[in-house]
Length: 453
Image (tube, rainbow, N blue to C red):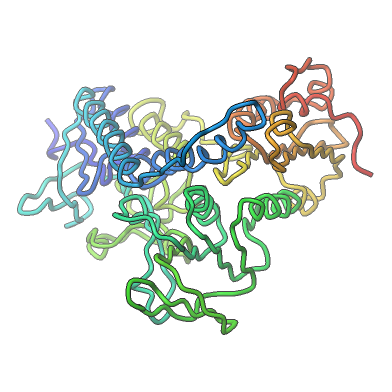
């Protein structure tokens, strides 16, 4: 009989923590999970899911306008009601919370609705209760970070945006990452006068350069004002609005200022000072290839360890750790972080997998580059001037496709399929010999024949 209350104790019920707990419990391991906020973590509650729902909402008005070219007419004025969207979103999130609870309970894992804090390397406190575990896993995710400047307490983050009581007439978004551009697109699509302020000369750093500039042009078509090489100097309350002073000296007024300036490991109030878990220079939990920390029986996975802050990555890490600890052990295959596809749900969407042109250049890979941009068939009648772009990188030495990038409607859905091909090592000849589906935008990936000079 074990001298501990549990074999495995997971702190945090986000995507990675829940997957690990479920898989371990299904192997007969005695598991407990502590979560003091919401089941499902950031993704379900204030991330991927509500964001995608809000993106859908923000596209409706444009779709109505596009329908005119197809013979539809609309009498009267359509009205958007933010509280209705909010209430319906909350209902769906509550449903998903229930699913996560059932998944955990049905697996046999015990759920503690409490904040877990380390007492020592084998003990956590849960309010007035203390429990022990042979192994403890930190899966507390990340939290939005707001830079220091006068009045920064007036700014909100994506966390608060999903629960706003009222949608403002004007908004300023601070940041240049995917969350910033997605939030700006949502608000602009819902009729908010939206300005995006970014300290760099172009947003979406790390993405393919050509894609970044193409997206800039498309985003501006949606009416979003982009202020690059600038930053917020201060915020000040001005009646019902916020007065925004920029470092350039310009002033803006807004109903809300949303700071989308990055996320940091959520390690506050965990009792980390009671255990000798080492952090790296960025303040992330340092782990080895099996997510073990500097303390032998303490592990960590997901956003709290840095790396790619993507739900499927945390899920893969949770699966690996359950198999490593309670299955195949050292024979467990490591998580492969190469060629992980991702999407940005700006408007139009970005889908990407593999290397960017700049990354390939830095790696010394001599590539053929195939690029195509065009007006999608739908917009030949809609009247919209939105354009689509596709790009393939092919290693000249092997003919393997090592990067695929797309800007356009449902880019994420299309790139998911391309990602399988790239993961399987498909060559350009494989792409060329694949018969396309006509008429689709996606067929462009198998019909591009001439490399860019």
